[in-house]
Length: 320
Image 1 (tube, one colour):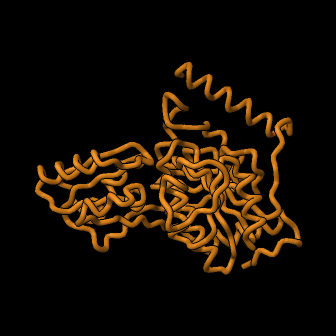
Image 2: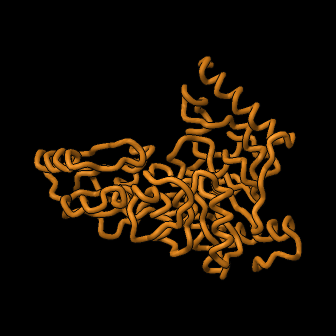
Image 3: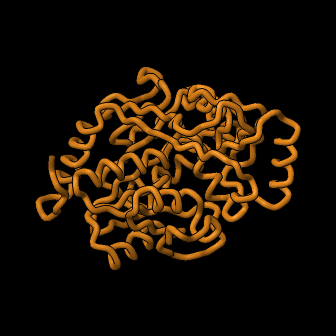
């Protein structure tokens, strides 16, 4: 193993032991916390899953908010996301969640402080903690972890993309197998096993286009475009959470000129990060990400029952 990866793993294990033993104290909010996280650096579908889970909760009449770090924002402290705001203010993913779900989204470096602010301001029954698996300061009542086939054969940072080893799944309540991941490749004995598939809504996508994105795994976006019937004539990839500049627009327009396509296609997250520059790239198609959770109603039933059992009769979470 890479010596730096070994060191990274040792530090992570030591930190987890301190939390497990109670040496480092977790802080608990008044309302239940459901964490959605993963093992790797980006690209597993956490944000689409938060939106899918949130949509299911709204259908059940459960009032909830979303807590997020707000990665990539230029602001500091605890802020309530304004859906009309910018990615620089709130982070691209919190902004996408707020626009998609229409629920309170609170960002903060400390998710505990974000949760406390949410509980003072909003009459919600539950918190969804976005990208929370490694944020152990905040106690959670239900841990959902997404895994992909790549995770099963990856290495710890910096040699690979894993933030934690597969053994960390011992802390999970439900493991979501993404993109055809197989349970036998992960230590999931005794865990709830859910399956989900991510794709792109084909409606309105051009057959040929210049594709570009600033996400963790751009190859997945290109594959999903092809599966949806869109064959990119050219493609450009930027780093994850990329904030686009004027020079990038010039480069993309030149790429379109050199290709035989007249249309751009990008992701919803990139559309948010483009901001006002989006108009410079017209015509442009925004690919909407879809997430299908198998047996979604049954999964939600189990989650709500576990939350009620763990929090006791004083909680008012609607049961199935």
